[in-house]
Length: 149
Ligand code: FES
Ligand code: FES
Image (tube, rainbow, N blue to C red; front, side, top):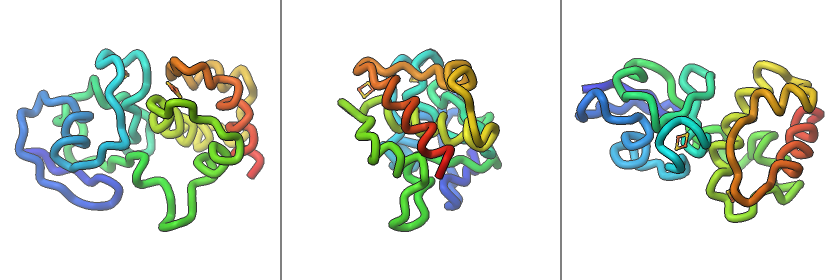
């Protein structure tokens, strides 16, 4: 049994402790904004926050998240008010197919917490998420917009 707090709500989860956190978020908690891409911690589609840090949930056993604060894409807006990163994404029309974008946004939110005014080099180093639609330039512009908000 794992005790998870996801977006401020407590959940008692009865699964094998080795179950990847991603599947618990999607199947037990029922939040499907976090996506499965590669399953081997390479693409970033599954990025969520644990205690504020970005992690790739496909490769983290749920036991490692026991008792910790998890935030998913569904938890970053304040009611109807988008997070500034989400607002910048809308303003720059970033998503194409959208599949990678929730993980991308979660990685960016964590980056801006660490570095409120990231340089292009900071972005290249921190945002290693893969986008098959090639939205990288729009992502960069939206990050700079969010950083100046
Ligand atoms: S699905 Fe987790 S990094 Fe690709
Ligand atoms: S928007 Fe399609 S994979 Fe990134």
